Amino acid sequence: MTGKERRQQLLDVARALFAEKGFDGASIEEIAHRAEVSKPVVYEHFGGKEGIYAVVVDREMQTLLDRVVSALSAGHPRELLEQAACALLDYIDNSTDGFRILVRDSPVASTTGTFSGLLNDIASQVEHIFGLQFSARGYDPELAPLYSQALVGMVALTAQWWLEVHRPGRDEVAAHLVNLAWNGLSHLEHDPRLRSRDHDPE
Image (tube, rainbow, N blue to C red; front, side):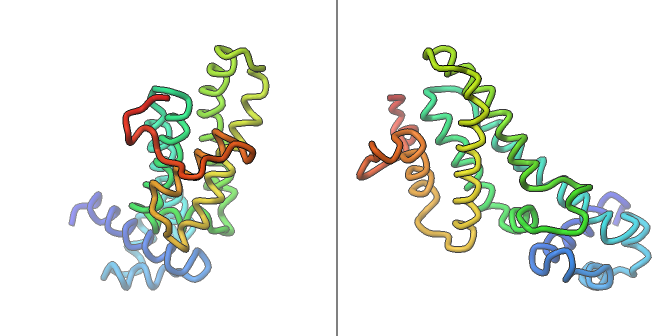
């Protein structure tokens, strides 16, 4: 293996181990054993458990942020809500190990970033979109931060629950989230659906 290939292999092994056992339960010894290398090889690449954990977390955070931001493309405001919810649920579906790592506390979370910090980054992107929409529709754009935090928090907490139960299906969960966010409790639809799946912008 080249140095780059070995580094990627160690990251893949460590990612799976951190997801399975958490930061405290994982060890350099087990990372090395699973990668079929000696402990000094791991130390050479990352300096220790904290170092490899920091890289794993940073990469997962960037992956999730990129997915959510790129999903917020264009369209009706309701479709933007759908896109954000689906992007987060897609990430959980396809990168379950990564999401488990992000939502776990660890001794080095403060130096590598936290899940709440990541949610603030996402909320900032949503806040910008809300601000534009609020101004265009005659609402106070200064309320955009409040609404963006509320929306992102609601989706993120539901996503953590869905990680464990994994039902109903992704689209149904997203549809109900958008139903609540868009219609409010007083105007909930009885059978919400993702309108973007029907190519209906209204």
